[in-house]
Length: 225
Ligand SMILES: *Cc1c(COP(=O)(O)O)cnc(C)c1O
Image (cartoon, rainbow, N blue to C red; front, top):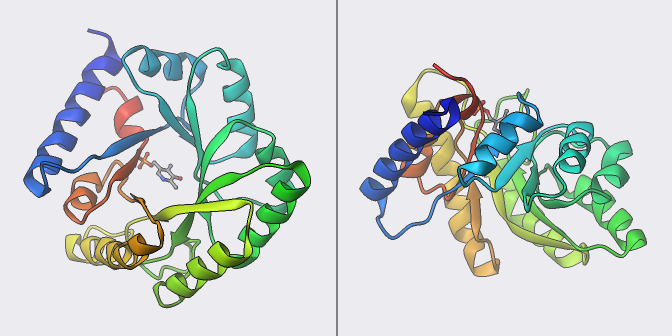
């Protein structure tokens, strides 16, 4: 069997197991984080049914999306977005900017989207573990920021929240960070939030158990063991 197919199958089974144990009616979407690989690997995953791919650098998203423009792929931006790269990103076929880390950045994206006559879907990134190296709004200010963006950024549509789990081996700490994000997501549901993006290769099963409905999986999909 193709190495990706075997990998993907194993991951898929783990996702399904955690999903069914948590809530068999839930839907969990996988975004394949392709930042470690090139177009050949993306194409291989596409051939076995994967459609959504995530990149954390604007230039990589540009190169790979144009190299694969014949395929109906869905591109997610998940990295730190520098202001001077916003215009480049907006020109690309990006279906969701997951890493909007505050009102200031949202306002900048909105301004440039207005000039270009574009509408963009975004997630608000929450720094639920409170680690200083992580981007995102604090849990305390997340709801206010979400509302402020929704009210003032007319060219953006907020679809929900994104978060990276606590960086530790301590499962309780990881769970706590996911629960913090999920509680905020629940409060935002009446305001239209539909996506709770959390869970990476090392912690996706915990994330699913805490209510995630979008995983961002990189190394576990693309490294063959
Ligand atoms: C790289 C990255 C991922 C995927 O990480 P893996 O541990 O390889 O699954 C997910 N989210 C973000 C924001 C990333 O930068």
